[in-house]
Length: 174
Length: 116
Image (cartoon, rainbow over all chains, first blue to last red; front, side):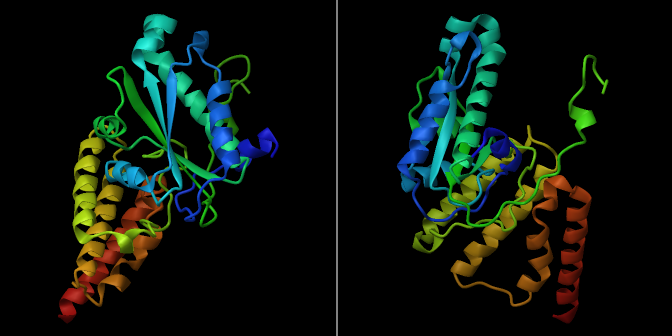
């Protein structure tokens, strides 16, 4: 799928078929993480791909925003110590989250391009997920990405008028 | 995002589509339910206000499913709640529309109450 088409057609999926992801999808997730840009090339994120249904079940228990039963979860984490080392104070305070967000967008588009539904989720208990995944102290879970083949077409999304989100040359100028 | 991160927050039509439920023990489901309520309550302090009604309604549906599993049901409830189930996706996108659906369900419950 063309990148622009992927951008235009991706919607959050919240109902999944009980079907494991193909190897292509797993490789796409790896590629998305490996080739995602980051400030100072810090790569201060870490993605944990969870396919074990028992582990997904444990995480779901502490994730009210996670709908349906996805075939896999990608837990997007950021590393505060690595962010500070590579990106300074700004890296620790902000860039690591931006970097994690960019890598997340890459995963969303790469998997959508392979026909996989996805949904990024922030409503979860970070401390609980951190313990369930055995994360070291300096690594925090920031986002969950639910992945799976869609069981139903996702709802359409209402976008704001372009004038509200894009300006030219100066703020508010079309 | 939830919520979900994307602009199309929490739009799922049904409350859940977990096909593994039948295999779960009621005790496990009870843990799921309790953790859902506690985690949602913890998260709501920092989340958009519109998530409150949505989480509460989700908790209600989860509780009703648990009751059903242990054999407690009310024959009129499905009709009363159908409008909420159908409008669930509006909770964050159209809170006023969702409130109308809740209002409609409440009046159906009043009908049930007056008939009993």
